[in-house]
Length: 193
Image (cartoon, rainbow, N blue to C red):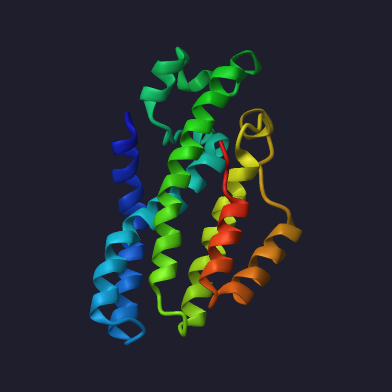
């Protein structure tokens, strides 16, 4: 993976296709009409990319140890370090710049997830909640990882707290039919640069 475009292509085949499939299933089950389907299918790819990129960010150490490299090599060239130097304390400043670029890129895709969810009819509470939980968890994870040296230096995977997960599930269910509360909570959770 050399560029964000390469990473997007990989993420599409891993997760974006799932978003397309779920959108089609909900259309054929009658949860969304044909006009909604056409709008949702445009956003499904970005939503899936955003979710997969969060996994790529938080699992970077495990992936690297198992021989997988999903972060674009172009970012390493910009910072003048090699992929294998990402976890060295002496490269922390450069490594954090790479991490934060990846986080901002992933978050941009999650805006598609917000738009996707808001396009689902508000009477489809279960479907909206199904989308909101991973969307909000992804945002909270990115916020936890942003500028966080532990992503790169700790042996432990950086995770959101159990309390935060419980809050996200509760608010996803509670806010699922209220667009303004969804947008407000999205804004509260997202990384602000």
